[in-house]
Image 1 (cartoon, rainbow, N blue to C red):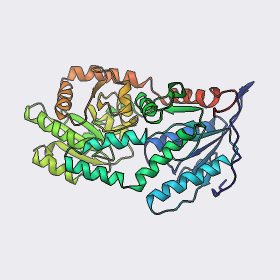
Image 2 (image 1 turned 180 degrees about the vertical axis):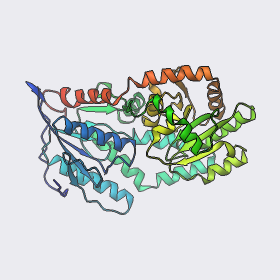
Image 3 (image 1 turned 90 degrees about the horizontal axis):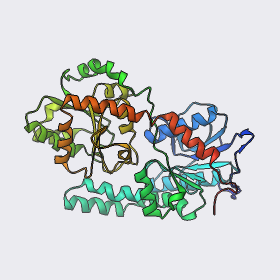
Image 4 (image 1 turned 90 degrees about the vertical axis):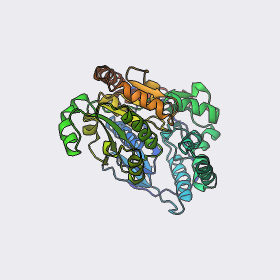
Length: 414
């Protein structure tokens, strides 16, 4: 089925109770600009959610600008947008997808930050304005900070994104919000004044079979491919946005570690961002020989298996799937309080959480902790044990309860 999104009168009715004698099949709709597993972690999760719902027999409708999912059970509706500028592209999608979904008379509408209204909200990017301010901290020179700040303030795209995200909260037609971490929940309460009882926290799930300690069988293959020694401590960094995930500060921390004349280590960098400026910084700090830029891959599980430790000093992540994938692979993690996934990490057990991504001294200290192989092994066992509580199956069960069991008898509150 393929339908053009058009303007028409809103005939959307509230969702009805879905449980009677057995499970009632529902008509479910979601608006998502890119319906593709190739775009990122959020999109991958939502494709899996829709696929799971169709497997359970529900009727799933996806309103998208672009899609490459070949599952015939998922009903795709093409949404035409104004392609330029980017701000109008975002806004035109939000308006047209929202109107088309509301005209579809669905049992449940699901919003992920691309539409102006929905019964259930689950914004995978967190809270836009929380990201706006926290991510600016990556610019540690005053004039650079000011220039970047002004660039954002004067950017129509930033204001459009903020408007789209805030619209459902202002309308208050939703009956439930799903925060993907406790950090996101607190941000929603602070920035949008949402009552705590309206928010359910459901952490992201991870494929605990794909990401598994058994992937250590690939250590020799991956290390050999990139010239990494069998005894090297391999520190993994995974991101497609090196700056916002703190690579520059990680390089500074590793320069401090190298001056301590410790056993050999390598920084294995996975992602498709440009490496040039970071290589220059590494040369200046004389650690360029310790850095390996591996590019992007369709087999990240092999790289987790070849590594000893994940360091993710991010300036903002609603709930990083990278951290969950590392934990499932039996790899300890070091991340920051700006990452919602830090809410599941116990200090000194599965890894560490530092307060400030710019604190390269604290980062160096925590990395040095894992230069002790006995401590590394204990944390590895704890990491896998923790990840087993955050499987995709657990995530689905909790989402199923919200989608199918937890509806109010009278529909969404006004």
